[in-house]
Amino acid sequence: MIEALMYSMLLWMGANCAAIDGIHPKHNPCQYNYNVKLPKVTFLSQKDLKYEFYSRGSKSNGRGVKADLYGFYRETEEKIFLENTWRIFNINDKATLFHELFHHVQFKNVRRDEMLCISHVEVPTILFEKIYINSLGRSHKIYLHLFDNPCNVYYKGI
Image (cartoon, rainbow, N blue to C red; front, side, top):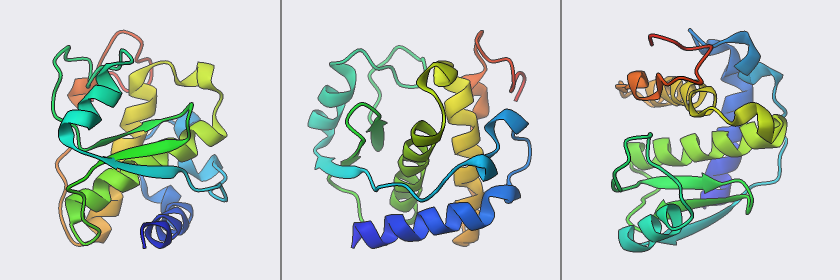
């Protein structure tokens, strides 16, 4: 069932890639190939999710705290990790899957060295996620100021 949802999300991404306002042309999702092999999906408890994420030195939004996670994507394994409370009919859970699936698409289409700045990865993803959530009939608040950091040359002041 989750595979069918991911395929539908990839189709939606390809059909709606031009709907994003405020995205830098260098990160335009319409330039991506959405015909990608699906990533693996693993469900973990919050404790195990945090361990998987933080034990390899990852940081949550640069805040330096070990915040709870809804999910994350690990490019080296082509795998999405989701909390085991994830439910297919929950809009927030769909948003998490969409977000992580778009990271998979980004990493399949852009060289790793072009994605070293978290802003250049997260801002386009969050802007696209917002459009997706709106298409499901729910407004979505975004906090892009979390990604206004020194390496950000495209989204300053958002």
